[in-house]
Length: 313
Image (tube, rainbow, N blue to C red):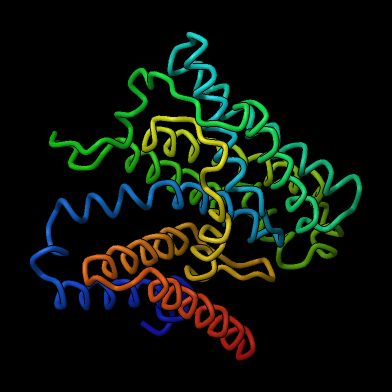
């Protein structure tokens, strides 16, 4: 039990259960129910998928501020391809490829120019947003989703949840297992814990860094597909500030800004916790500014707890 309580994701899980129970008690008629749970899971999918990639980035000691712009670029590219007559699979592949290529380029710039990830991804955030606006001619792109809207549509079949929820869980499972059981995952933790030691042990730090940002950008592209499925339009102004929600999910879930620590399950818990707070606040009629204050307070508390725990260690 002591070993379990030491794990970073246990605290956020307890907080999630407590907050969910609190909202169930305060608004049982509207908050409790399968339909509301399904809605909350649908609203968490985009942040959850993006937070899986951000978890890998932060474990290896980096940061990515271009997530929101990457999602917007993906929606625009996919919508443009759909409007041009391409099928849903080809259009989705084009959108994911565009996001993945952007992540690879940023990873190469970080390793070759030896510039901090904060600066490179900050520039990438502006560049990708500009590209999205340029491709869309600074307006939304309406196109027939050709079935992509079914990924996030409410369902009454035996699957219970929309396909997008299952896709998010599958991606989280695959990346989580890769972090624990593959050489790549061990190298990611090694670089985040101590880059110089990892280099002396033979880890090719530059290659790991490029792979990390490429993987994170690919997952951002998948998150963009889910966003398009929800909006059914390509919007170059969409997902503004999404990167802050994604980083917050990782931090709340036990990830450390210093690198070397974090877990996929913790990030998913953090993403779901923020959704529960927003949904519960809406059901109680709380103003948006109150919800933002509560979410910000939880983020600060999570970071403070992480520093306290690291100090004791």
